[in-house]
Length: 185
Image (cartoon, rainbow, N blue to C red; front, side, top):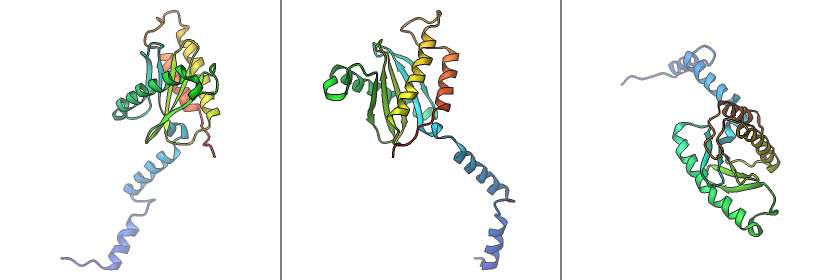
């Protein structure tokens, strides 16, 4: 077995200078890239539009493909909570006419928020598990509702069918990227 002196270890550490070693430069670039990501990229994970008959009209996830199935399941499970809040307003909600349903339920990694339109179309927002102010979520849902109204007002859109508009998808992505949630507290 070969012995290594402390001098050799010091020289080896000096060779791993973060500014000159290509491996360290690459690792530093990756760290900067992750640190420079905006808060919204880390927070909004999925947005869904569900019709009045609980049929999915639009689902967009902003994570890897591995999580997409899990997020679809979370959205599907949230529909039971929405139905419970709509059918039993005394137990769960402060106002019957309120369209913002608030926090539907938290999971281990996510929080699920809901919004109900006048036509009983449901918007489901899945975020990472952080404390978010309700006012910021309401603002997001207002902007998303406006984009939804523009999409379904298109004369070529068939009511009750999936939203396939590229313009709507781009507008949703823009809203998600531009929104900034302030943490409560």
